[in-house]
Length: 194
Length: 181
Image 1 (cartoon, chains in turn red, orange):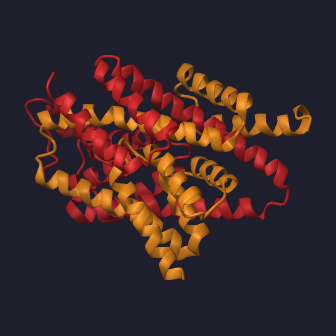
Image 2 (cartoon, chains in turn red, yellow; image 1 turned 180 degrees about the horizontal axis):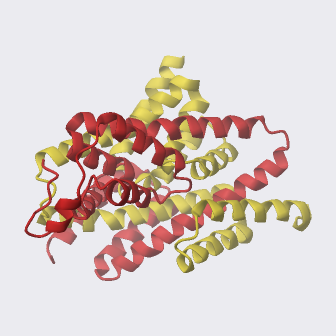
Image 3 (cartoon, one colour; image 1 turned 135 degrees about the horizontal axis):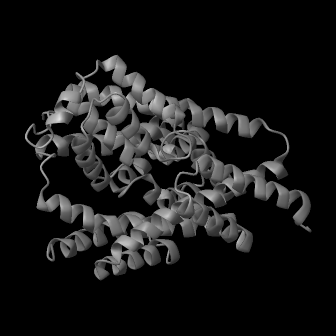
């Protein structure tokens, strides 16, 4: 796969691109984003770092990488750094990006959890933890609202959302078989009208 | 015994890795069900705490799996759960970008994306319901969640960690002054 943008479409962008970074630079860039990205919005950070600041990746390649990473299972941002790492440095680039990206949060969550467990005032701790959880539900609600809004353009998608939410959320059916049944149907529905 | 735990952690998280459609938030309901109800690794209370910690910490929210692994079997558990959740989906992603000429927009990409997106949204709604029921916060919980969502919709540039801190602050004030029992 090549990372060179189409020169006919984006001549000025091609001139502006910098040479692909080394594995160490990729690792460090991802380490930084992994550690600094509190509370989500990580693809924005990646955009800032890879496209705007370092000019390693073109706007266009970023957009198509983002689309692929959102389509596939797995944390979107992890898929995104795999795509960009591969564009820049092949398999080794992908591995450097994923390791750099996950190693910081890995120790950070464990450290935070250890601090949490060591704090004495259980009642206040529970209250704070509930507050964070409720607010985090709000963040998820935003994602849901935007998803429902997008689905309005194609009513069968609304039915899919409702079926999955009711089956897994209300009826407590196990997630895996529900997805295995509904996902192919939903993809098939999306196939025809396009 | 510990080896069994590691194997179980991997067996639980590998399928979730491949089914986390639209990202890690989609499998919250599934992870909650497996770790609280099926395997009794953690209590409902602990699940809420781990969810809150994983959201407040840097990195993808899926680090929730790391924390569950940590609770079950220490460092090795954390490593096993993290690998189980990130390696399969990463291999799949790498395979797909290698096999398909990924930067060319293709019809099946579009169908996959548009078809899977509503499944992902439905799963996130299920996750919201699962945590809402588990936390049992009633109106107050709903109020904080809706207020946080409204805040982010009106001010998309507002840092999310600020929203989480505001949620914690509200509950602390409530615990201090508002609660009667």
